[in-house]
Image (cartoon, rainbow, N blue to C red):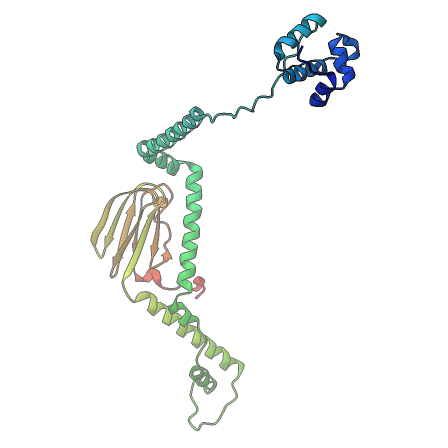
Length: 294
C-alpha cells in the first residue's frame, strides 16, 4: 500500500528480510517470539507511520498472546527523618534534668543528712579525718622549728664538745685533748637536751590555736582564757578554729563526738565514749614527752 519494499524496511529497521516476510505472511513460528516479535512490529509500524499499539494489539489477538507489561524500576524512596522521635527524646531528657534539679533542691539536705547518719559513710569519714590528722602531725614535725631542733650541731658546738674534758672543765691553753667515750656520750646528751629545750620553747611561745571538729552532732562549749567563745550544737563534719593566750576549756555532750587539735597536735579524748566529757588545755599540753620522738 505504501509502495515500500521489504529490503528498504530491512535497511531502515535492521530486521532481516526473512523475519519481515514471516510477519507479512503471519508465519509466527518462524519468528523469535515473545518480546522480539512485538519489537519488530513496533519498528516496522514506526517506519511506515502506522499505529504501533494498534498493530501490537492485533498481533496479540491473532496469536492469543498476552502482552507483557514493562515494569520500570522506581527510584529508592528516601527515608524521612523521624522528627517526632527526636523531639520526644529531647523532651524526655529535659524532663529528667528538671526532675533531678527539683529533687536536689527539695530533698538535697535530707539526703545529705541521711548519708551523714549512715554507718558506712560515717566510717569512711572517720578514716579520712584520721588520715588528715596524721598528715597534720607530719607537717608539724617537718616545720622549720622542728627542722632547726633536729638539725645537726654546728661546728662551734662540735668544737666545744671536743675541747670539753671528762670533769666538765674547758681547756684554756689551746692544746687538744683526747675525748673519751664518756665525753662523747656527755656531749651527745647535752645536744639532745638543747634540742628538746629549743622545741619546748618554740611550742610554748605564741598564741594557742584550738581546732574542734565534730564527727557527730553534739553540744559543745568552749572557753578561751575563762571567756565562753562558743556554746551550742556543733553539726556533724563541722569544725571550729579558736584562739587563746593561755588556756582552753572544752566540754561536749559526747566525748567521742569531737576531735581536738591544739596548735596542730591531736588532743586525747575528753572522756569515755558516748558520755559527757570535759578537758582543760594549756601550754603544758604542747610540751614534748619522752615517747613523742623529739
